[in-house]
Length: 165
Image (cartoon, rainbow, N blue to C red; front, side, top):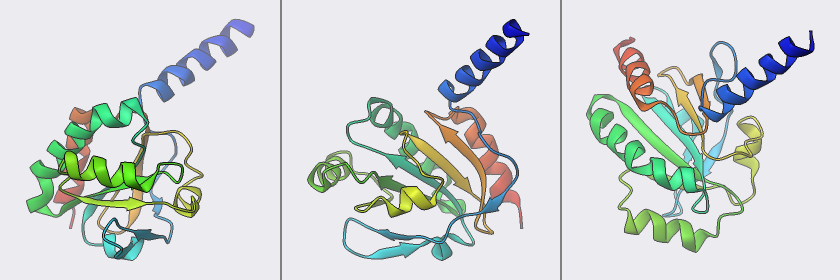
């Protein structure tokens, strides 16, 4: 019995480390207001009608910085087909670092700063970065990744969701 539990723990640890889905079924994305770098606001309601990637990240997160070119490439590949990306910087990330990162890397999508941590809390108490959610056109979370997503798998999912009415 102990070996089975240990093996299960290893599988779970590997799954989390590989950035796989943790959760079951689609659920409504939490009602949130995102404050963007330019001071404007975007709400969860604004996502409806598009497939949206919501990426919680930090400038101090090595994996977040490493995956960002793939997040940009994914956005560029699908943006003309009704796909959007929203990068949400964690509350502990200094705003000046986030602005500098977004400008120097020429991030082509919207970037929000979760100053109070309320958005991360609403989205399942996000503490680990990167944590990435895929939201369908109906505003439902269909997938959550902790760690860098498998981008080939992510692209297949995005294509499937974009094809839905």
